Amino acid sequence: MDATIIWDDEPGGNVEHIALNGLTPDEVDSVLLDPDIPTVASRSTGRPCKFGWTDSGKHIIVVWDEESDNPRVIYPVTAYEVSPP
Image 1 (spheres, rainbow, N blue to C red):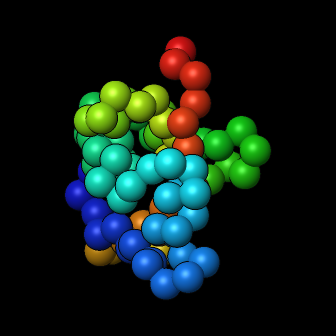
Image 2: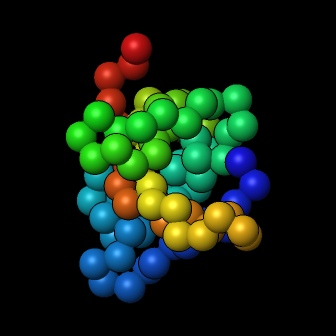
């Protein structure tokens, strides 16, 4: 995926949110930017998401908002560990 990822490290931002779920931006990026992992729609919100393995061995879901199409800019809304398929 060729995109700019917005990481907000202010209090209440997405960096803090994923940290509360035990993840780092690097772990999220490893799934989000993997072109071999398909993008699907979240069943609960309809937002785009990916399920995949981090470089550290965690199976996670990453859900994001598309902020812009050209250039592509995305904002990770949440990410957390899920059971493997």
